[in-house]
Image (cartoon, rainbow, N blue to C red; front, side, top):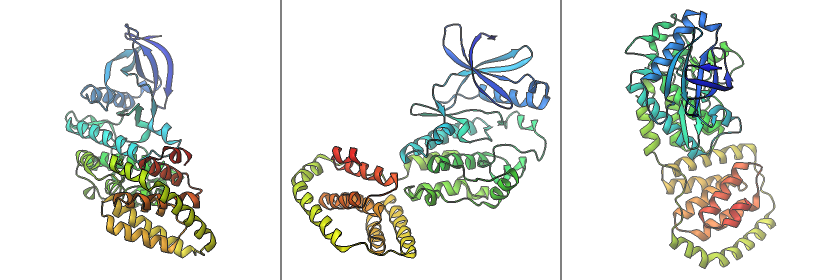
Length: 406
């Protein structure tokens, strides 16, 4: 089949509104061609919505947006062509689990920058969700402007007052209530926060069994903080997500650009690589440290298990979360005090030993860091994240063999 100057190769995706094909141009370059479904093309509102997407895309050029290449009609059905993206949607990626923290930061930063550009061009997206983000290598691409609103040309008037727009789970309260006049850049900031939240947790901010429940939960702001679902989420990032997902638009970041700046400039709680002096120090203390570890392991085994009540375990986890937040803010002394308290309450808390090892590396105490890592390894864990953390810590200390084992 030939659509405009493009020869259709295969169908890639199909939805309730349109179908996307892989095609090639006259030079054999791959492109993506999106056609409105023939039966939907008869509906004036659906047709206008499709044309809105074309007009919005025609104005936008950004490294994190999929550019439009051309548009037209085929047998009375409108179509447009985009660059063909070799990759997968963010939603497909999240089915395999949440993203690593640094990858979530990268995706969030790129989407925030793209959204800031889009808003600067007078366009709202109004349907941010992982399905509308494509991943191509290290690049996140915002796509699907089917609900876009162009403030310059008033293309938003294609919808009836009170009609639902967006996707349950990611739409802001004002959008969930159908208050279209209240939708603005702050609504896209909410959706951006929802996408970052999904990157961290693997799920949308609001999960419900039906539309009515989703609206109710969204309007009431019943969202579980990301750190409760994923404790290694940095405190500042959890706070940023919560601000983006605020029920009151006035409590959200003022713009997508503000979110982008926060993601670029905020502290990371991934330790810096050890320099050569630390590696030399490690070489000189390794034998002593290993001997100390053996003695510590024997002494620990003689103590027998320490009874930890459910209440103490919860308190220990709370102290650990506080320690992680302090460490993320580079307040190392309070972080050390909090992690020590966590270990007093629950000496079997693997993640606490991993954090204390990080703090000891920051304090130029590689032997102490190795001791904590050895204790964490001996305790073992049923949590894969603990083993990943152990491996990363050993890698930071230059022990590739232990890192690979973890």
